[in-house]
Length: 181
Image 1 (cartoon, helix red, strand yellow):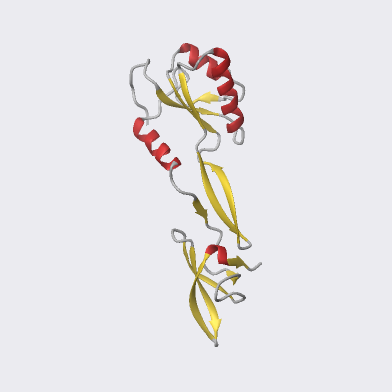
Image 2 (cartoon, helix red, strand yellow):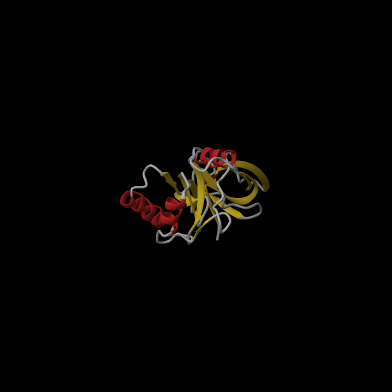
């Protein structure tokens, strides 16, 4: 994960902060950049997030979650001044690396993080095999059954519904099913 490159080259670094304070720290760093004239040394402040969709009670709830809770990414040229000013920003616990020098994130690792930011929203699975569900829309609306299979990629469930005394497998979208409590 650590790569050695010339000190004057811009690289990605990671700072640690308190979980839940990432956006506040990002804002504080951006203010420090503005007030201390660090625009030529700090280029991006990034709190990687991803959109998830959770199905609760048959309703889609969209959420934005932090990919790396407690961490903020900085694209910067690291020198004594920029290192000191970022460390002194309220909410910054420490740079990731040794006490003597922060470690830069490798280009390969950072490309993976940036690529993941471009991905589509992810469906958060709240259904498990064996639990009871009620179909709330579609041709099997009103029927209850047991989850037999969960297909997260397609956002579908295979539900065993008792029709005419036999368990019949039926494919249902996540948002068309509701857990029976």
